[in-house]
Structure formats: C-alpha cells, structure tokens
Amino acid sequence: MTASTLADNAVRLSFAGGQVVELHPFVLRDACPCPSCSNASGQRLFETPAVVPHARVATVDFDGDTLRVTWADGHESAFDGGWLEDYARGLPPRREPTLWGSELAPPVERYDDVVSDPATLRRWLAAIAEYGFAVLEAAPLEDGAVAAVAELFGHVRVTNYGRIFDVAVRVDATNLADTARGLSLHTDNPYRVPPPTLQLLHCLASSATGGETIVADGFRAVGLLDPHDRAVLASRPIRYSYRDASAELAADVPVVALDARGEPGALQLNNRSKGVPAGSPAEASEWYAAYFELLALLEAPEAQVVLRLEPGDLIAFDNTRVVHGRTAFSGSGERRLQGCYADRDALLSTLAVLER
Image 1 (cartoon, one colour):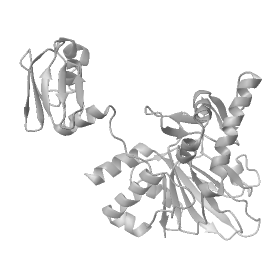
Image 2 (cartoon, one colour; image 1 turned 90 degrees about the horizontal axis):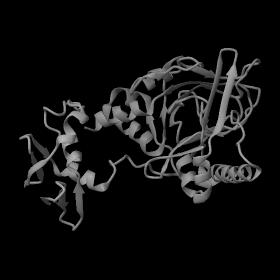
Image 3 (tube, helix red, strand yellow; image 1 turned 45 degrees about the vertical axis):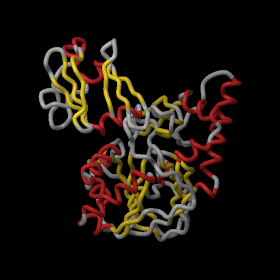
Image 4 (cartoon, helix red, strand yellow; image 1 turned 45 degrees about the horizontal axis):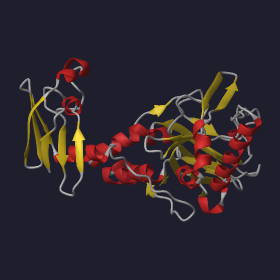
C-alpha cells in the first residue's frame, strides 16, 4: 500500500491490487486506536465533537503495513493493514450464514462434551451461528436443564412465560402451543419488542405419537423470494399481538427485516398472533401475494428438516432466522418439552471469546 494526502486534507490509499480508497481526515482521527484515544475494550476516550472537527493531517507514511498519520496538533495515529482493508471493503465483515434445506444433516453434539470441553462448546455455538440451529444429545432429564445450557454462553431472558416454560397439553390452554394441535412454521413472540433472538427446547418426555419438530431456514426462503415480494414484506408492518390474564403485548413490525447490505436480517412470522395488513385492497392483495409466496417456500418439503426429539435431546435455534413448527400428536402417551429464551449477541460474544 501507499498513501498520500489530497488538497482537501483527505488521505488516499493505493492498494497493491490497484484499488484506491480515499479517507476523510475526520474518519481517521475519530478511529484513532492509540491508548490515549481508545481503551483496551475499544471504547473511545474522547468526545468526537470536541476533537474531530479540528483534525488536520500533517504527514502520512507507511511503516511496513502500518499507516502512520501525524496530525497538525502533534497527535500521532497508527492503523494496521487489517483495519485499512476492512475499511476499504465498505462495511465491517460479518459471520456469513450457510443457507440450507432438507439436505442438511442437523449439527449434533453430546451434552457432556459441550459442558466439559471448550472446543466442543465452541463447535456447537459456531454451528448455531452458521446454520441457525444445532442439537444436543443426552442432556439431563431434569427441570431447568434447558436454562443451564443457555447459561453456558449467556443469560436466560425472562418473559411473561417465566424463566423457563413447559410445552405440554393443558385443558385450559390459552396458547396453542399447549394443545395437541400441529403448529405451522413460525417465530416466537413477534408481538414483543424486541423479540427473543434465541430459543432452546429440551425434550423431557416423548411417548405420544406424532409431535415431530420441523425447522426451516427463513433466510434461504427470503433469498428465493421475488425482489418485489421481498420489498413488500420488508416495508409494510403488520401488527402482532398476544394477551392472557397477565399480559397484553403488541408490536407493529414487517415480516421481513433486511440488514444494511439488503440481505435478510430477521423474520417475524406467526400465523397465530398476526393481524391483517393495512391499506387499500390493491395493497392488501400485493401483501398477501408476497406472504403466501414466502409461506410456500418455507413449507416446501425441500426446505424443511424434520426431527423427532427424544428424551434428553435439546435444540437451540435463532428465533429471528429459523422458523419452527410441529406435527400434531395423539392424546395417548406423553409429550413434554421445556424451553427458555436467550440472546443471540451473548452466544456470538462467547463464541468470539472462545475463538480468540
């Protein structure tokens, strides 16, 4: 790389491959990584409006692959090649998801290995980050074990359903998850702001006929949508709501959220709690056409992985990416799952620390 200053005090970087990137001096001064400007955690130690407006470049040069900038006030900044290359790409790199359909063999680890071996924990968390879900086998058949697994990487998110919750048949059920009915593919709690980003479900009993768990990759389905349909679902909010004796929850959100790159960032999809689209008949017709197309992509056999959770099996999944459902089950026998919610950022943080 070479560097030079321009007439307006910007810095021009010329990369070996021929790429040229120009950086405003405010960007470089604001990003200064020196110990007087940034602490060990990366937090800025100065107020941007107090320092950056006065930034003027005096000199620039390279020491190996390190860009050194001397400022008019005598301050010095050093930027390594990795930071410069990341900046040249335009947006910070992200952990890319691997999209999947029915061909995927679910990532599986054993509970004892994940608990006792940091390398196995890292591999299990990395699978959730990459595919949106992973399975544990042979978890203890104990109440609360699901929360103990969540606490391997973060904290349990408490909701009106409690710290942990049972999914089992109840005579007085207000939530359809507590009946023997099949459940269409959905994300949990879209009526909550923000919704839980991770869900864990632990099978404690499974002697009933049916009740298979179905998962599908929402990001894959959104990527297959017609661009117009994707834009409709991403731009028009719909109301999701839920109420019982102790809760009254509602949120107005689009079915699809796109990230800064225009790629799928989140899904909020739940037939049981969704409202109806606002607008003219033409707008409603357009929304339903896009919505039905998304459902068709998710419900296609080639999009789904079907699992029968046996006692001791635990599945953890990204509740903003992976939609889940189940087949109906018979009234004979027993089916009991215990679940909890957690936060994806805690999982990604723990994974990043393990990968250092």
